[in-house]
Amino acid sequence: MVNQNGVNQLINAIFALLIITVKLLILILLIQLPFASPYFFAVMMAYGVFYLSNYMNALALDLPTDSYTEFLNRFKTSLSSLFQKENIDELSLSRGLPPNVWKEIFNLKPLSVAIPKEFGGRGVKVKECLGLLSAASYESLPLSLTFGINIALFLEPLAKYGNEVIKGDIFKHFLDYGAMGGLMITEPDYGSDALSMRTQNQLIDNEYHVKGTKHWQGLTGLANYWLITSRNANAEGNLGRDVDFFIADTHKPNQNIEVLEYYDNAGLYMIPYGLNKVDVKLPQENKLIPESTGLKLMLDVLHRSRFQFPGMGMGFLKRMMDEATTHCKERIVGTSNLFSLDQVQFQLAKMQSYFTLCSAMCAKSCKVSGIDNDVSGSGVHANSMKALVTDMMQDSAQMLVQLSGGKGYRLSHIGGRGIMDSRPFQIFEGSNEMLYTQISEGILKDMKKKKTENLGEYLAINELTSNASKLYKKEFDFNIGSPISQRKMIDLGKVIARVVTVNDLLELNNDGFSQQLTDNSVEMVRQEIVMLLASLQHHQNISALENLGNSDWMAFA
Ligand SMILES: Cc1cc2nc3c(=O)[nH]c(=O)nc-3n(C[C@H](O)[C@H](O)[C@H](O)COP(=O)(O)OP(=O)(O)OC[C@H]3O[C@@H](n4cnc5c(N)ncnc54)[C@H](O)[C@@H]3O)c2cc1C
Image (cartoon, rainbow, N blue to C red; front, side, top):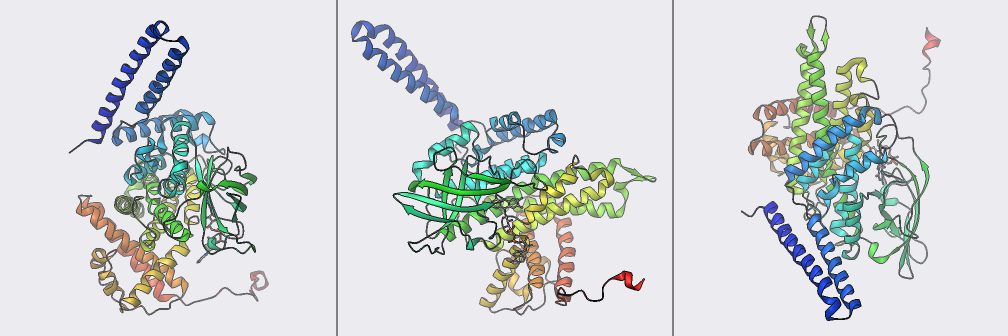
């Protein structure tokens, strides 16, 4: 088998040899040509060749020659020692990161994983992207989200749908100058209902004028590039149903985004958020090129991003688990350590189950979410991963803080911060309630199509759940007739997300992943499924009262 690293080294060796030859040529030209031909011509020739040699030198240096293991190990060690040196617990108390820390991080070229090979990157391999996200989130969830925004919401869409004319320059800025990019979808009046956005575009004199107001964009005021969503306005000013994507380069004239306000986000201090005024004029080549509609492009981009959430979850869940385990072994309460208490064992086993399920998601994501795959139709799978992993992240942080006692309730404690840092993951890129509802809608629709009302029978024939459904045959042997209330849809969505993930876990286990962790996780999930199904079956559709009536307890005391 051809080793990619070996090929790169061979290419570099050829470049190096070429460079030496070219430099020798320069020397000969400089010595010979003043006598043989007009001096001016010789100097120009020599300069041309020298420039070419530098260009080739740069090319040779730009090609990544490290194996992924070398790259990732260097990233992990450098990040860990940088955060130790700078004291990440202290840094996390204030907003942003000092420029020297950003610089040191970007010197490691983390975003090279999401840049195609032909532009000097490592080739946009999902495994490499998730490995980087995970390594970062073990040290800092906000840092991992910063990479996640750049990778899934900017670089991957650009690599897949960007005009070839603009790609080279942008990728170079990311690789060589530490540029960053983000995505603008949400508007103050349109969040969950993003398709009703009012930001509009119009083609006037070969330029797209894009105007509107966006808010809550990760990297507000910091990103060099923005991917901006908008709807086309016709001559009468009516907005089309489709959504168009444009790239703005904030350093170019007429493309800057004005920040109207910075938000006091409750966690993720490292990342600036705020209110953005969009009023830009963009060349036509800055428009992403959809394969069919902009809506399909949007689904492909958002589903791929949701498929890659487990990368950010992985390191974070492992860190919460490691911290909790160490603490519980060391902390003596009464006559023994916390570790020996039954309830503590339950909590730690749960954290291990989360770690296991997230591992399965990562492994599966590598197989299905590459930019060559169209994931616009993979809503059930992508939404299952995003909603479940983010619920597990929040729950893990809550458990670590609980187990740490008062010590955990501090911003300088990774668990204390973890609660607020992981919380918005349940809100952004589709609130989890919305995603669980969509999962159930997808399943119930397909059940209707397949003419079955028995959940167990259906899950046994759906390839996303068929293997796992065998493990929970007894639990799933009941009928569901649609329509059901939304609160029931959400319970059902949570159940489906778990079965889908256990299905992925069985695949990972088949490839050799720990049997004990798998068995424990299967049983942990069984307990969660039983609880969720009980909830689903016992909802009474109680509504919130408009008027609280006779409800002041003081009147009765
Ligand atoms: C930290 C953070 C980072 C963000 N990053 C970005 C970014 O980079 N780019 C960007 O464009 N946007 C970003 N957002 C915006 C985010 O995507 C929106 O906040 C989100 O889509 C929800 O929209 P909203 O805030 O308008 O809430 P609303 O749409 O008003 O929804 C509020 C709540 O109502 C409930 N709800 C809504 N719809 C349903 C439903 N169908 N079923 C059940 N319950 C429902 C949910 O609990 C939801 O959280 C970010 C937000 C946060 C907090």
